[in-house]
Amino acid sequence: MALPVPGYSPSFKKPPETLRLRRKRARSRGPPPSLTPELPQPAPRRSALAVGVPLRPFPASAGRGGSDGGSAAIRRNPFARLDNRPRVAAEPPDGLPRGQQEAPGLTPHASFSESDIPPSESTELPVDWSIKTRLLFTSSQPFTWADHLKAQEEAQGLVQHCRATEVTLPQSIQDPKLSTELRCAFQQSLIYWLHPALSWLPLFPRIGADRKMVGKTSPWAYDETMQHGLMSDWSVSFTSLYNLLKTKLCPYFYVCTYQFTVLFRAAGLAGNDVVTAVISPTTRGLREAMKNEGIEFSLPLIKENGHKKKTVGTSMEHREEQAISDEDEEESFSWLEEMGVQDKIKKPDIHSIKLCKEKHEVQMDHRPESVVFIKGINTFTLLNFLINCKSLVATSGPQAGLPPTLLSPIAFRGATMQMLKARSINVKTQAFSGYRDQFSLEITGPIMPHSLHSVTMLLRSSQSGSFSAGLYPHEPTAIFNICLPVDKVPDKEVVHKELANCGLHPKTLEQLSQIPLLGKSSLRNVEMSDYIYYWRS
Image (tube, rainbow, N blue to C red):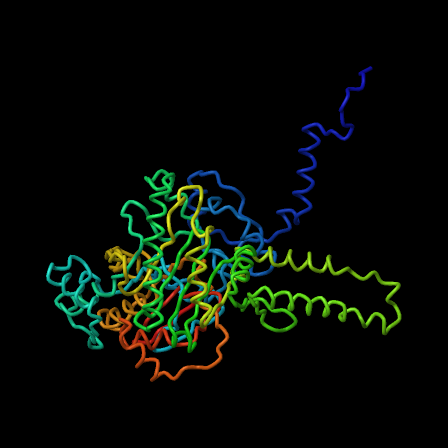
């Protein structure tokens, strides 16, 4: 008699029993082959059987149009038969509904059939205040005109930028490679100004850039004297930029730190009649520090009691606001007394309510919802706050001791002229009748709003109003496209007159003066067809 083995399962089945179960299951799935009407076998299968090639039995439900046939067709092995007919299915093989398949010959970023939301169309693009890191244009016409500029064309482009020369091109250029005016204007559109400028360090983007800076030489990291010198020069450049902005000689500029980005805009841009600043993302500590410095700001994406939340910075007004808030909390539970159930329901105390509010404020830290809006004279207070803010510069890591990056479309004190990198690429893409040439133009670097508009204006003429583009934004700056509260909409003619010397093309200035409409998103795909823009954010 066999002894019981520990861990032995009495339900264990021997291999022969398992095989019997499989046979029973196979028989229960359908009627026996003898009861199934034979289907006509294809000619290739009959030929294979005639020469003695062993083949698996023909599926009983193959080729049927019913629901059972559809499931069998999906499960079948395509190598089980010689005649691989296309599967019978209501949907395309990759699972996308019909009508949403990408057209052959189009690059993935140029396809507007990826979602059910129809793309917007207009003769002009909406204003996009995010900083792009890469643009990829594609067209059926070559971009060779953008390569290998002559020394005279490069010099002319630099002079045109420094003198803010307005260039107007015809609607269509017959031979772009022979157009000196086009090539000089392209050189002009690639220029931007930067501080500080260190050729061995990538100074944009700064948020999340530690990995790219690891191992790079940074002699100032442990030298306080050098750090003080860098911050002193940076403060002079920052003040110079703000003064240019205030006098409407600079349209806008960015301050890029390792934690957040600030966008300063001149009066008249984005629908505001005063100087404005937008900061994103922020933390509770930064907001409290600005509040203590007397900076009045608002959180346009945070609503409290059905109204946009506005924070006043002075300590006296802050205490009064806190007292009013406490009174509101007491009154909010007065309805319990009116119903006579105040003793039966436990009312949360004021400290618990404050802790919940603080938790909510901390939860939105480093998120787009923490964006802060500052306007008017408070932007000057913000300038002084940022210059004296100790946490503006990292104290450890690869960015330790390195001042924030200043980006501007025009020159300012201590700035260095930089160029966006551009290169044309020619590839072969598959089309209906073989292969065809696909021409691409790639632009990389900190691409600001004026550069994007200038380049698209040039391509309108050089590519005869037909091209597509993939836009890759620096994600933390996409929130700058939200529609901010406006007290008074400035007159367009007045804006163009007052900002006539800001260094931008009149059409670019007209676009930047529009109220942003993209919200929390930014332009991702753009296509021009017959001089009409189609875009998706």
